[in-house]
Image (cartoon, rainbow, N blue to C red; front, top):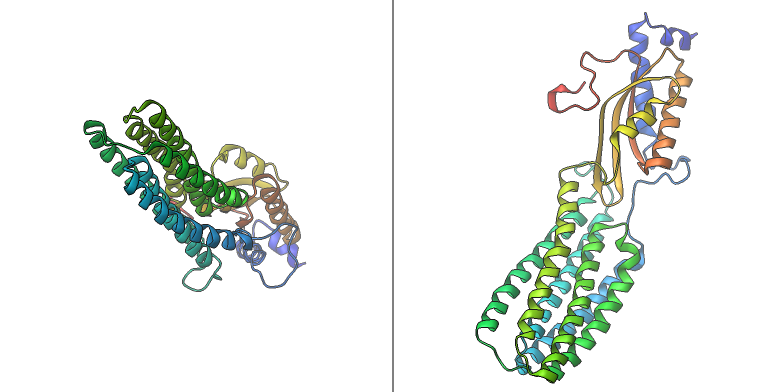
Amino acid sequence: MLEQRLANPKNEAGAAILSTKVTIESVHAHTDDGHNHPPGHNHVHLPAGGASLRLKVGLVLTLLFVIAEFGTGLWSGSLALVSDAGHNLTDALALGFSLWALSITRRAPNYNKTYGYHRAGILAAVINASTLVVIALFIFFEAAQRLLNPVPVAGWTMAGVAAVALLLNATIAFSLHQTAHSDLNVRSAFIHMMGDALSSVGVMVAGVGIALTGWLALDPLISILIGLFIVWSSWGIIKEATNILMEASPPGLDMDKLLVDMSHETKVRQIHDLHVWTIGSDFAALSCHVQTDNCTLEEANATVQNLNQMLRDKYDIRHATLQVEYQGCGQQREFCAGGDCC
């Protein structure tokens, strides 16, 4: 009897109760309170615990190598080795920031940070990428000076130290590879290490070339190539991090197709005031108004559950807040901003 009254379009109070009731149940489905959730329902997308240990080991090894490579670069007169040591130092900083951010993102949500601390990892990624750009600018400047005023370089020493650097950086990068796919913070550290591995290959080539030909320009030319690679690899991280901080929709998400898929659900008349944004790496959220046909409370609740399941399975959106209503507000737009929202 109560369901019939709520489903009656003439009963505006009942319609309001229906909207509020289903919205509360929808939000309740996202609380980690010990109740059973649908398979795969989990808001916390954090790297595996092993990532923390790998970052710590990588940090210690990188710092030790930076000291050795910088000293060797000064002794041999190699700008490529000194620049590579500087790049390795930023790798150590990157690993340190990533380790710090990893510990912060694991903190539980609270009244001040209701979504948790996922953005700490994004901030660490921005810092890591920015330091890479600064190092690249320094390399360009020093390379220009070295081209104008060539300095003798111990080629075989360059190649030997670079070979050790390649082994170290490639090993650390490989250990972070799996986690890098799902976490921008760890990915920024991974790119640092991959950049150094490739830089080491360049330094090896320059060292052997100088030892065999005596062409000193190889050293600054390889350094410039290293700097260009650093800038290129940093751009992707900065772009993705900026999009997350601007609360952009997840990369590759087709909003038109999402609207169509949600509208095809039984009892759904219209979807409006739709928002999809990225909270952190691999953590997307959605909110919208779902205008339904005349239906009972159970039917409306089933519609919400079906929409949540579809969003999880098809779009990997695991945090959705759906406000169900029988009569829409005055301004029904697919997307809204500021005071235009209902």
